[in-house]
Image 1 (cartoon, rainbow, N blue to C red):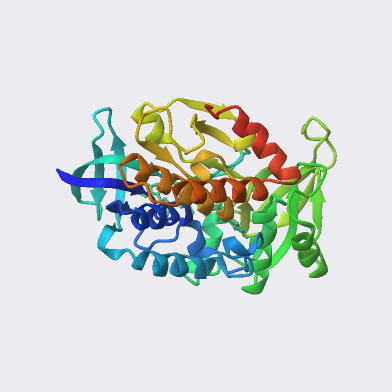
Image 2 (image 1 turned 90 degrees about the horizontal axis):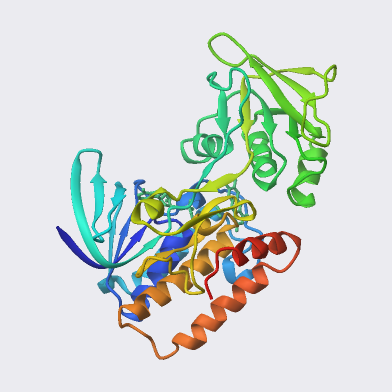
Length: 361
Ligand SMILES: Cc1cc2nc3c(=O)[nH]c(=O)nc-3n(C[C@H](O)[C@H](O)[C@H](O)COP(=O)(O)OP(=O)(O)OC[C@H]3O[C@@H](n4cnc5c(N)ncnc54)[C@H](O)[C@@H]3O)c2cc1C
């Protein structure tokens, strides 16, 4: 059995920031990441980030992991990183089970853990939704931006949130024709700046529309689309056909929470946080002592919030293990202030109303 003081599960922005914060406080940190590279969702985000300067706004997402890894390198005597490690179980006695490179299996028993596994993509139910050529937006981004593979020639995007709009733009940059963007909501969910950019390039955005059916033999050849009423029900007679070889579904993410549920952490379904999330205190400690969570797993927001949550959870986990830095209170107050400012505004209001339902005071 491998011993560790603090294990961090997931090397995305939340996990890396938790590692920086805990290692700089003096805790011995082991990061376990299932991919062969660190960075989480950031490794495929070629666009410049929005948000505030403190969380690297105007820096390309793909460049942020290196900034965080350089920071982590300052405390390298306290840090061990293992990639290609998928955590498959977290047990009541604190043991974590890991599969390394698909065939090696080992156990680790840390004194504390920060779970930062992020979120996974939601899908949609419609006839033939399993035809080849129907992808989630994250998969399309991975194909294009990580592996340099064009997913197809004619794409219909479902979802006009920020991810749908940004991925549509990236598809066009890769020379793919985007025939339209649909959204079942009566208004565009993403920022107007992204919507205006794709509209200027001639892409229609059809609100109050959904995909009714995919048609094809070996792969998708057509998508049938229709209007929906204010109860999101299809309106008969409004069907239109789009000739496409890719249907890209971008209808949101939901927290990847199985490990926390398995460990016995109290979970609650909170629609404002996009799924089932852990009940936690202001230190991001769950209802199981010494099990912390940070990032999209605590509610889907953005990398900016995930990073600050990571810093806060790492700081508090280290303090719990006896590594309380002299400036602990000052740093904690600063992270809480940064989160408050990221959550100011209409989207933040929704997030805050969700947090109220899971925060133990
Ligand atoms: C197209 C797109 C555009 C975006 N644009 C922006 C933007 O401009 N600004 C912004 O702030 N945010 C943006 N975001 C959101 C941002 O990327 C996420 O909010 C952020 O990455 C969440 O960080 P995280 O660390 O919680 O999770 P992730 O980045 O998802 O990282 C989780 C990590 O955990 C690992 N993991 C999961 N399960 C296991 C397991 N069992 N064992 C081991 N490892 C595991 C994963 O492999 C991954 O590396 C965008 C997202 C997308 C998809």
